[in-house]
Image (cartoon, rainbow, N blue to C red; front, side, top):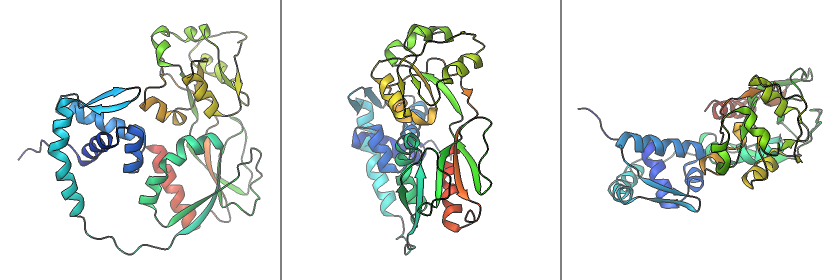
Amino acid sequence: MRIRSPSLPELHAFVGVVESGSFSLAAVRLSVTQGAVSRAVLRLEARLGIDLLERHPSGVRPTATGQDYYQRIHRALLELEAAVPSEPAKQPKEELRISVITSLNMRWLVPRLPSLAVDQPHVNLAFKSYLANDDFRRTDVDCWIQQRASATSRWPRHVQATYLIGREVVPICHPSIADRIKAPQDFLRFPLLHHVRYPDNWALWFNGQGVNTGSLTLGPGFDLGAGLVEAVCGQIGVAVIQPCLIERELAEQRLAIPIPEPTSTGRGYYFCALRSRADLPAIVSFKAWLLNQAAA
């Protein structure tokens, strides 16, 4: 018999959005990212050939067809959940002390913590203060997620560093002006917002697109990537930033990438641990989980 029913992740994503009225709340409920929920619903709509949701800036609600489909499937999903055997006894939690660069922590890692609780319930993260010039000799931290200082910089010899994500940047703008940006030069018509620690990111991106802009006039600068994101959402200007920092805004259609052409900065975010402790089970398992999240 040919199976016509959609996959369970697609159905759970749709039901989660209908019942919560939000992609972000559904993502927390399902312990996945907002982008994963959005993609699952899009696949479901494509598979069925119908629009299931109406997307508005104020929220999401089902279409008439979507509401009917929800009524027909949500009881079946509840029965499937009830049929799952009881869970085995839980392992005791192991505390892992971690220091994470601020913007990546707020915008990429924290939204994924529900998934960590499901995949590795024995790991209990304890967040420690982030230091920009950390020498990795602190006794209160077991592992770090740090940004590489430059494309040519090297990590200290006592540190094992593994690339995670964020090496490339893309240009972003408010959706209201996306249709006015057809070529890289069109960004020059708007204030070029920038990160004060990396003022050359715009020049890197333009050069990556084969555009020689000469001396760029930059707009306001921000000391956090999160500040850049909020400024673009507030229609203050345009920016270049790592895609991993804007997943929520893209899913909610608060940001747009009018020219989806990335350029490598050579930096990126790295998982770091002392070589003398890198083989500890908690560090190994948490690192594997991080790499899986980054790959997804």
